Length: 163
Image (cartoon, rainbow, N blue to C red; front, side):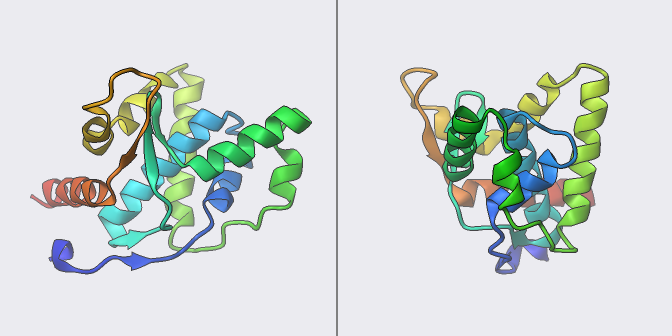
């Protein structure tokens, strides 16, 4: 059973995953963060694999990778767009991960066509995000999302699909 296996770690660069989504028309930092998280969870669920080791933070709008947020936010403030940043970022090359990213990029495009962007927020505000935010005193605080909670959530989804 998958849930007893140790997770494999691909040690991918999160910014390369952000670049993948950017190159497919997702220009908003918040939406890119959501798509990275959804891909992260789905790859755990279906491949028993971590994309990277960086910790997720439970910010008010959903899960966030601080390194991706900081570099993209700083670059946008300085240059007005992300073009230069992503020109210098290595592309995502992992053939096992690309189909998951592609599926989420297509799903995003469908949401965008129907003006349903808000559905991505709902999909990312999963139980691990809720658990991390449960004791915060205001919406502007953030807290680490425990990786064990994300893994448990992904495996539980996987078990539900098989049942």
